[in-house]
Amino acid sequence: MINIRVNEIFYSIQAEGPQVGMPAWFIRFSGCNLRCEWCDSTYAFEEGKEMSIEAIVEAVSANICNNVVVTGGEPLLQKDLLLLLKRLGHMNGYIETNGTIYDSNLIGYAKFIVSPKPQFMNKKYLSTLKKWAGQAAFKFVVGNKYDFDTAVFLCKKLNLKDWIEVDKPIYFMPEGITDKKIKETMKSMTEWIKKEAPYVRISPRLQIYLYGNKRGV
Image (cartoon, rainbow, N blue to C red):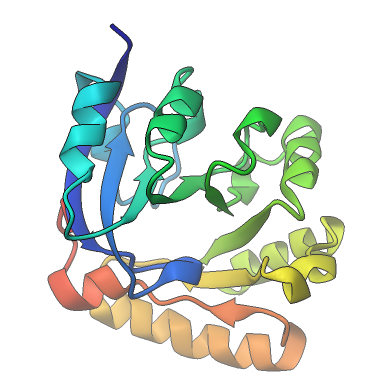
């Protein structure tokens, strides 16, 4: 039996990026190859339990919703991800990834949202992100003007503007785990985008406004 290490499975709404507001099942895998200082799901670094693909599919296949978001951790670390996606082929699949891994075999089985982590950037990481350009929407976390400028630089370096007209938008999302912090950052970011990057869309962190900084939402 093939098992995948799962941190949690829950039913909520997508609160970030291109599918914001969309009801969906969430499958959060365990394990990540990066350690971001601002990560709001550090519990997914190690925690989790082995689940069979059959058990995962059964858990999210209720008739109430046909959308499924695969997240982490870093989902592409799971060597049997393709098998799971094939079993979930009857659903609308979305995968959130940090973009450090690219597997062409996965393209077409889900829609991808790549969230680059600039502090880990090197030649190999940049080369991999270039493979994702045109294959995914991009979402950058912005906490201050330096983060914003770095994200704009990467957008240009990856030629992401070439893809925004073919349903591959670019999102800048505020860093923060409180309403106050998110609102402050989003207000500043709005002005920066208006002046310097009008091709970018702003993503909220709707789960913080609705539930606070909690798991399983």
